[in-house]
Amino acid sequence: MDELLKGFVFDLDGIITDTAKYHYAAWKRVAQDELGITINPAVNEHLKGVSRMDSLNVILKFGHKENAYTDTEKAEFASEKNDLYKSLIQQMTPDDILPGIADFLKAITAKGYPMALASASRNAPFIIDRLQLAEYFSAIVDPATLTKGKPDPEIFERAADLIHLPYAETVGIEDAVAGIEGIQAAGMFAVGVGSPDVLGKADLLFPDTAHLNLAQIETAFNAARK
Image 1 (cartoon, rainbow, N blue to C red):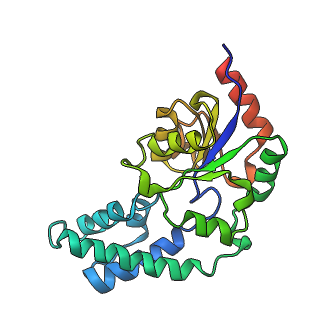
Image 2: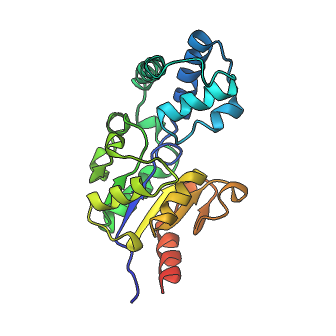
């Protein structure tokens, strides 16, 4: 039987807005001041879309200090980073919405498709409020309730469950390899935003958010699901 497109699940970072610069600034300061490790943009690429503790472990490994701290100390570093990050994102406004996204969300809403947010960020509800986009999302996954991170499909499945979407009739939108893998592992249709060199496995790819097009997604979804 043909599946019908029923709704969307979205990643937050790199799709709705770009908080990577704020995460990077916060991690850079904690790494330098607390860990004595200087991180660079190449390290930052490995911090995108992963949990706070996983990010800290990436930084410690980069600085050859994997075993230098207790779990309690690591939790304190992660907490300090989050406090810094939260102070930085207080500055966010609707001007921080990525190009084309506001119109894209309006188009999806006009067609009656529900949307949920599948973000690894515990600050996602706050950020969505700062961007004044809360009205578009019927649900936001609380990452504290999850046991696995991307590329495991759990976060995408939870997002779809919250708005009662069958996985095969759901489109997931992501900018990271782990996210695309998670969407596809859930049996959803994966829309990637970014470079074909990185996201070549996506079911449909757009070069950037400004090019996201609902009609193209509907056409590609219907062709793939027949």
